[in-house]
Image (cartoon, rainbow, N blue to C red; front, top):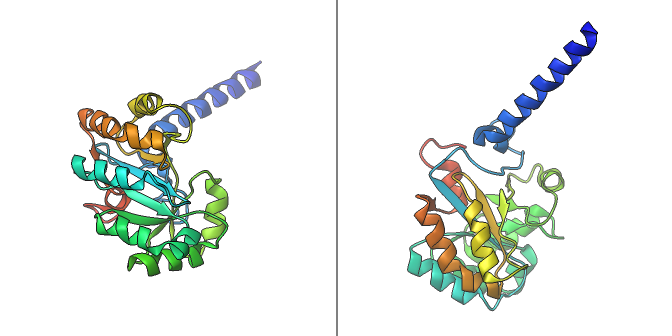
Length: 219
């Protein structure tokens, strides 16, 4: 009986520890433990980052850039190495509008993809974004490349549902989160309202690099 009570208490303590761990933005990133660990969110409670994943030449991109510009928001665009090689002017358009470009995990080896994105943008990318790929797998493949591995806290799932559903999903945002989206027509329609909703929560929307490395030089 005594052993059973001790085991139950240990299990309860472990469960409580896991709840506290997941509730902590410091713990969720694991970034302090290993530079190669995927970063899902940061400790900054006043900022969020929007990462738009580009794996094709999206017709919605122009409208997205216009909405971001009107809202005074800078975002992060994750681009595959394949797209950067095939359409480097798209990468230059993004950078020319003041946004940052990351590498989007794809079939291309991360270091090679980073070279393609860097050649197109004129800047060496610092991170690879997992997109819909398994973060642990991306971290293993990217190990030794010098790229930080970024994963989404919340996926707006902009390839699924109406623009109104996308706006509703943005209501689950809180400080330190990394939001993922795709350049769909629904996102193009919803983005102005999404940006306004997030700002009305008292949150600033910044490029991922600023949220990760601003102020204290680390996560």
